[in-house]
Length: 174
Image (cartoon, rainbow, N blue to C red; front, side):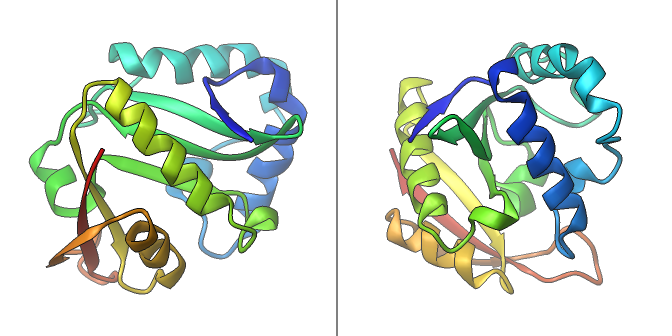
């Protein structure tokens, strides 16, 4: 199991994972508008865009440069982590500095714990000494992963939406 930079080598398992996320009732927003049927034809461009996010390219308004890594195990895409290079006020309140996700079929198998552990090493290599992680107060699995990684509870903050769950806030030294 390792963290790698996005690679076309994992095209098939990434596309299967995308479909899993889209069929999950609580999937990350990034999969909402992805056309999984057209993704195979444009996968090389997609990978390049993921890689170039660290240079500040292909970012939505208000987003910051981030370095994206994929967790792979036995040649299979398991999940994704993004390490944001700086914190904006929005990220300080709700998004945090590290965002991660494990595909639905691989949850509850220890991958989330390993993903965050490896991401903290990468954050240190990127020159980040302390990271803010947030999770919905309803996301007990993520809360436990963060605490297991050494997260120090700071308190609760607002949610992404007024009608959504509040966020737990944790700091971890890398």
